[in-house]
Amino acid sequence: MDNKKIAAVFPVSPCQEALLLAGGESLDQECCQIGWRLDRELDLGVFEKAWQQVIYRHEILRTSFAWKRVSKPLQAVWREVAVPIQQEDWRGVSSQEQEQRLHAYLKAERGRGID
Image 1 (cartoon, rainbow, N blue to C red):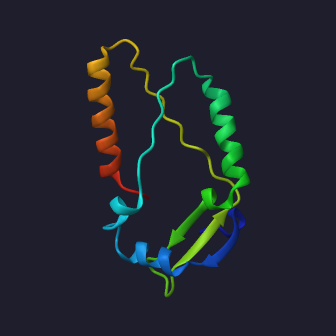
Image 2 (cartoon, helix red, strand yellow):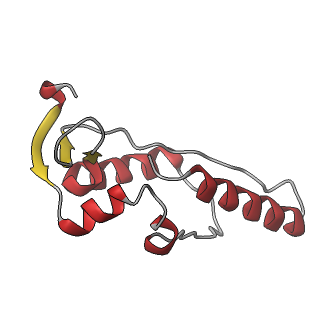
């Protein structure tokens, strides 16, 4: 970890430690996916800037965990974290195809796990 990019380091809570040491096996029970369907045009630049402000304001959204190659798990709060935005435009396909794509996308995201 680059110390100039880290704002603070803290020990993890007992609950965080249990999740980390479980190796992700319990994450399906601890996490859920949430989605929204928009009925109007989205200004992606404004949307990205808004989320970047939320990340800047809330340390927990800039926090990562180190539990490998350390004697005791730690959490590090980063000074800056870029918001990863991925845009999918499915307006040109049928609603049935949209539902199939959404189902496949969400399944792939769950399979990807949490880094």
